[in-house]
Length: 266
Image (cartoon, rainbow, N blue to C red; front, side, top):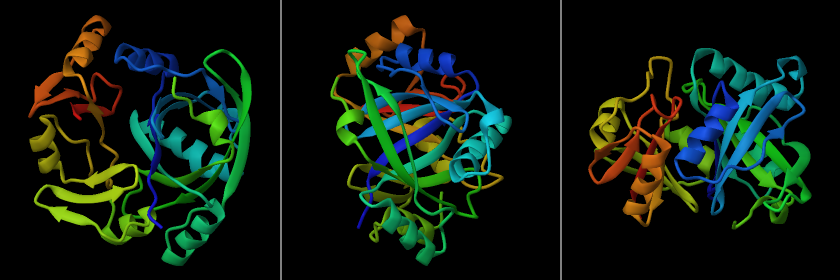
């Protein structure tokens, strides 16, 4: 069964500076959350997808459990080298079954792992949120973390207010990958994953691709916007540096703490 996008991790060294960046970009940033393995985050929600802005605040809490090893320590190591997009997680309706399918495909990094935490609604009400996560690894892309995420209490969480071909297919559950001169696309039920080489990336977006000498990287997030004028109006008072390229507004990695953010017409 194909798996849609669930969320992406933007790892930063200064969490509040990261939250301020997204606010200045015009996003609503959720309350600060804390994980038992020492990472803290803010969540930026879109319909059915979110950006997890994350840093490691309490490294002494990192242990030998699955989340510490596969998520906490991975992001700690990532941040020792750079800031940017560190982890891609797809949606899951059964994390245990997905973990088994990853094992069968030879890409598993963990069994299904479960955790819960307190969440806060926009009105301040405290709610219970929970997730089951199964991690995957591509040995050809050690700079990227992969996983699937099953929401245990989705009604409490969601609120309106370059991998190898075999790996990408096994990871997304999408067997039909589309190859063009610009790269390979896996079209999931919620958003596309596009694999591009450095030259194609620079040509399409007008900014340099990240260093991939150590393997594939998560380079950019692409958003569709209905009103370009409203976007520009939000960027100006926030003091956000951007470029315009092929009808897209591009906030480069230097301005966006290691991640390239691309805003295109809907």
